[in-house]
Image (cartoon, rainbow, N blue to C red):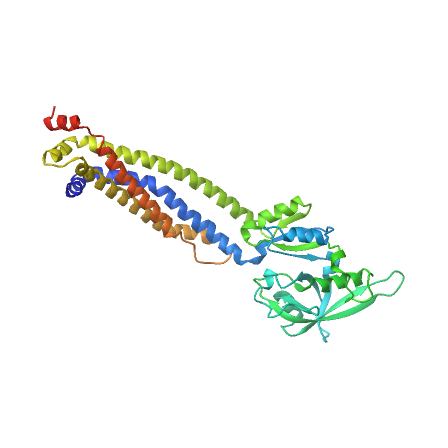
Length: 394
């Protein structure tokens, strides 16, 4: 081991060249992995904070039965699904109860206790005479949680005067703007179904609700469990005949970016690993060939083959360890520009994800072990007649 260290220092120029060469082969996959984790995983984490990115929007109106709802709800790509009636039913005039204030067009959406938009917002499930307003709707109506809002339902029978029925709903909560940006109110599906039945002259009062197992709905609110599954959910809904779109095209972009970076990383890793193995073995073999006379002298002073193998083993391990350290240093140095790149894709500044140390540690151990094995293998390529010839100098 002392001879090996002294030889590395003595031939420091060649040693440095060998280390730099090995580091140039190790660094690309290390830096690329750092970039992939920093960019893709941080972006995905940023998108996952916005629940709307998990939503698949149904475009237009359809005929959706209870069996369709069960089928969609059973998909592993579905995290939440709830039916909605026609769009003409969903938008109604509303104003603050017992007030002559401004009336606005309020978009009514269905919800229940499983709704991801409502997570942490309600202490108890929403009742049939309750609603949750978006921040924009509450601001325009000058309403806070605990107040009441009046939905101004109106229908016009053929050849008769318009009929108007005010329905008062208690505001159970107000959604923060980051949860929902529209001018919307969320109610039970049964509540909105009662409105539809009255508006279409199928019932005499808005609270007269038909059996749900025979109801046909016109739309859905549907969410994937994770942002990464939103595209797969959209594709399955498209196959079922729905026209859909994602709330944001960033979901597609991040999945394509992740796929592209993973493919590039795989290619670079295979090429770098192959070149590293070849280069390591070649460097150690050339070192042994160049130092035949030194190995011959080791043999003269009593070292056997196993003792002589320690010489290239130590050199191979140390050179590979130094190369790994340089590669990790380059990856750490790349963190700042990577953070600058990633922040440009995020909706709000956030902490950038860093790779786990375990894959790097395992990779370094494998590389150092390979360097040691290459050194041992190179030492055992020397035959006894090679050592005798080197010792005689002929």
